Amino acid sequence: MEVVNKAPAKINLSLDALFQHHDGQHEWKMVMTSVDLADYVHITLRDDNKITVATDTGFLPEDKRNLAYQAAVVLQREYHVKQGATIAIEKHIPVAAGLGGGSTDAAAVLRGLNDLWQLNLSLSQLAQLGLQVDSDVPYCVYSRPALVTGRGEKINILPTLPPFWVILAKPQVSISTPTILQQLDYEQVNDHPDTERLLRGISRHDFQEMIAGMGNVLAPITNTHCNDITRMCMQMRKFGAQIAQMSGSGPTVFGLCEKYSRAQHVFNSMKGFCREVYLVRPTLS
Ligand code: ATP
Image: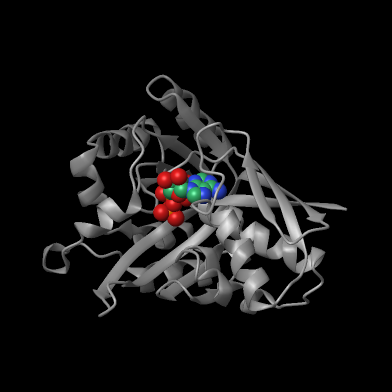
């Protein structure tokens, strides 16, 4: 028996870091949603108790470094499961891009194995387990608009977002999240997103109010590694995006437009500058 789980990419409408815990982890305050650019995770049961992971990329690790593998092992260990699983990942989400590709694959494995191994765990239980793999996994278990706080484990599902379109553009470079987080100096952060305003915009279904509260505290750091970020955000704005900013720790930038025709214009214009551009719909609820 095989299950196929869709593993959507996420974007950060806002990303704020409040302080660093004694264990080195950060206290996050992020508003996230998912988009319809997705990997597909195929899982089949095995007779033995082995976990195997394969991807169609040729360059991603297929051993214990793969977050999908780690998720399966955590679930198997915590619930004393005697069965194994064969996992095959069809990758569409750019890697090390700030779109949560590894985390969403891990979350899809948790949801898929919960069904295949008949564990009957709630999404909340899967999310708590997912935190052992990566701080974005709890959000990805839900993959719906949410306010994410704590170390990534506190997920508050939000009301339906006002409608809009998303243009994603990934610069050529890939950037590792730990490299960016090592450089996060709280004394230097003076431009925090206005998360309360963003949330107010969402609850009032007011797109303008929503975008007025957006922002990403990691953007100035990532921009020191790849100054394409500021340039690409400016281009997106020039072509008509109503806001443009970086997702996660980057380097992918995204623009938002309420009208499809305007989003299509931004998408077509960005294609002249950037090889990897996508026009996608967000998950609104
Ligand atoms: P985030 O936004 O959560 O920081 P990201 O989108 O920047 O994540 P990923 O695509 O998750 O980055 O890749 C980060 C690292 O994770 C890469 O170096 C990659 O080798 C590793 N990795 C492990 N498993 C996977 C997977 N299933 N898919 C993608 N990357 C994976």
